[in-house]
Length: 379
Image 1: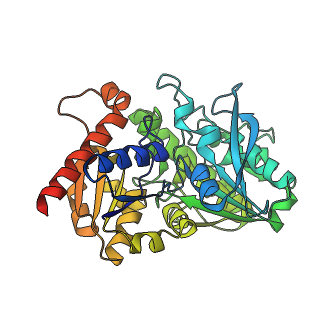
Image 2: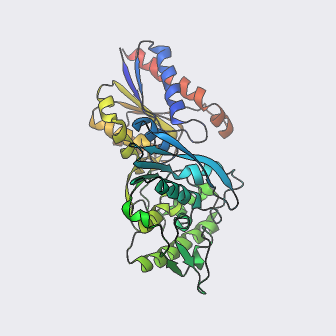
């Protein structure tokens, strides 16, 4: 009997991690009916992190209404409560994520992280002593300023008037008033679970690397980067500490920076955190094969994405790891030197993006069937 560990992330805009697990399992069982499949729906700080940790730690949802990415937008969403109510798990994408806006609505000059701050306040109201914040999948580029506003911070212009923060207004901020910042943060451990290690600014920073997927053109990217740099300088002068060059400060449009600066957060790899909570090493040790995947695998995968974290663990345990992706993008070949045994694109040649999104579940299952048939023929 063959044993498979199924540890994919979500396939953005098409499959949740759980749906990906189910499709993989169906594909395997069509070829190996007696196979044992251990499902471990993964996340790396991005979409699915709350659900993954609730499942791993037998937690519960906390339903809520918060401000969405755009002014005047209110959304119904949820965060997680685990560890007998002592720890909150918050996924910023649930409040201010890219999937909450249509492509036409996305404008990182206007979007904000205020709703994420509201969820932090709700967690503090319930008396948690630890908050885990997943930062992937954002549609924002405000450096976490709006999140800080929700927690009581004020940002002032040259005349001392309040500036309501968003990506396009950070350049107007000339001073920071933290006298109203929620004092409960000082007694609360805040841990960032990040899927990237980018600094805040520059060619590898939040605006240049991730701005275009959030709706920014080349001119807007340049402006957003300048605004973040200005904002970071003002904040760091005000608090007497520097965070903008730290790995992960650029996560979620600079929300990583804001959390480091305003909440005293620590930061770690989101996928490593989920791997640890799931005891994935113990599950993987009994496996013959490990399957992982997500919507796109390319050179950025090695910067902290789920498939890379899974592959590193599999390599350590000397287990073959096969990654499935909707798209094998630029530079994916380099990943073969980093623990991946095989990488498989699931979409038929010539299919449109919409077809790929609509048929992801079927395409993933059929790709796993083909892999399993090849595996069967090898024996």
